[in-house]
Length: 402
Ligand code: UDP
Image (cartoon, rainbow, N blue to C red; front, side, top):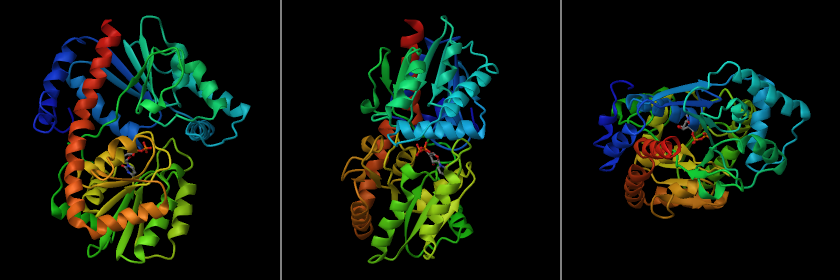
């Protein structure tokens, strides 16, 4: 339970029957325990979800722990290179880096107790912990990134670890791999009652706009993302510049740093350079827990972008849609299951296409509002924490009670 929010609190929001389903599945898991391991407590979508899901599992009587692995700078550089390579970018990964990956996984393994019935390892960073798996326990590897076209050298290295798991969870069918273990599809989710997504008053929203000196007399184009090249912040600036020739508007790029992403500061410098001459571009480097601020920006924005060139899922899309905004997103990965073209937003393949759709939404506020309502309802049915919880519980019943 966080801030008096219990599972009952979601009854009015989640589709009918979801909470009852969660209770009945949880009954079949009495006494079971789960451990989640990832590589950062703050920053990025995985920690965003674990912060919300872990307490709900505990409320249901399933003992759930969350451990964060600790690394060195070389380890995080290595795991970011793995991340880039798995998403298809060419990377030079040295023997020293592979050795550091193994060393840090072994070091963390000695500090964590793995006696839960189910261990869920998130993403490549802690995947190597699996050598600690005992026969009595089940382990799942949950991959949150797009590994549909990986660099094979890295995938082959990781595959030796992954094939020791009892199963894999992906965010999109096209991310599945040729492996001899079962693969499951679970979409990520947002929590409508978290600080990131709860309703805010106009006063709260205005005070946050004033704090960052964001003008309220012109349209606001927003992208919320870590400063990461796959999120294409430079492409967003280019698209904004095309729009700006015709529509008076400002651009807000809100980002924060994740402790496991050492590339962030360099990308931020490039973004600042690209924006330097324009006083209508606002680059906000926020603390990673600035949830109410992100919420306010998403609520105030006229058009929200997620112009990624690779994306595992893209929680920011669901967050924006939940606030009644259609989203313009790169036609990649998980963005394509959230944006239904022309209904909940537009997927785009180029800077020009992005600019064209921004102008379309700016020039047609009624259509935009209508699409925003559809986006909210679509999110309610498909991408809320309550659906996510039921998917996890159903998988656990299958794995642990079989
Ligand atoms: N986020 C945030 N502050 C920022 C940038 C991002 O709180 O400055 C949050 C964002 O709202 C979302 C998560 O971090 O909840 C990012 O998840 P997503 O799946 O979009 O991308 P990832 O960073 O995991 O690739």
